[in-house]
Length: 416
Image 1 (spheres, rainbow, N blue to C red):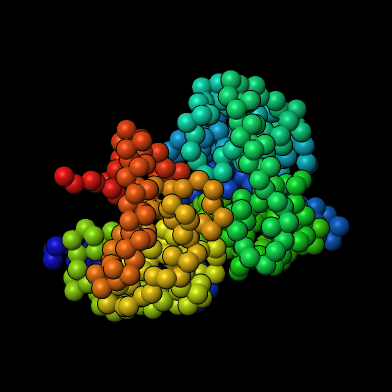
Image 2 (cartoon, helix red, strand yellow):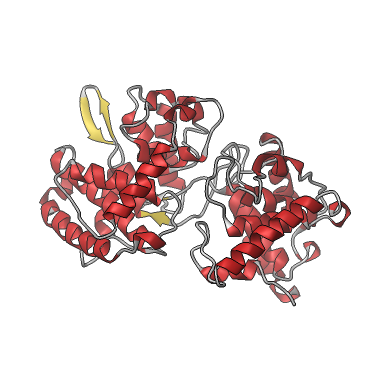
């Protein structure tokens, strides 16, 4: 690996280049869905309402496909959500005559009609029963209802199943949990709860102005609070300028993502054959210090960026990375936070288990040979969950966090 050490070190340096105490930085690609939510934000200044992020609307127009839809990244649900959110933004701009400028000449109605036809076609072909995207059963019905307010109604074979899943999910959801001090992963998708929660009671959950590092959720919060949050506005301006879109109008689905990128890039390098000695010692020490700081902030747990809601995936991998770098790191906080009766949860309030997250937890549990006996019961339980999931899936393992079934299979390779 020696001949590639310079390139590996440069990659490592890039993941921590923008990192600072506030946890800024991230290189997630732009998301039509999140960009559309920013495009719908207005602000009133001196009695005059205007679009707060006009470049986002231009981004949506540039990225509309020839058939009228917006891109599908990795699944049918991506294309459906992107197209629904973009259509909502077009409806808002058509019906709210603010500063359109050079966009006045564009035929927004034609774009909407083409988008609706393309969306109807996608919905007709959508197999709702196989969808695994996180939160789709709440987000898509919410988008469909918002579209109906503009006269856009869509019927398709899976609609009844979709709304049954929605009603079941919402029957288990208590809005008052969002008003409590302890944050939950629902903060990442507040747009799903428009009309169901009081956004004025959520200010205490902002971190650096964001709602769990989600541009779409933060935009929904900003637009639906009766008291303007200048810190959240500033966060969204920063995302536009410094995230992967770099002022083009596009924003990613999460920002910042400093911890995530440092953890997973470093793990990929170390698992790919590089050793700590192959890489730049100074950069590794900086990275370790950043992760240890996040660990302290999270009381032994890590999120995809400092100060956000921690998860088992990032926490387990951070523990493994730090141990590989010679930094003793306790595992008990992860066990206490995410352990369930027969598996480990990705987030504390998760209902559906993740195969890949449990693989990563198991890797972390096995990372210290001196503690194998102490954690024997946790190891056995995790192996049993993975074994049963593998057996019952006929080796086609579906996971809400990993779209490619082969990726899940490579994490778990039974021997013998």
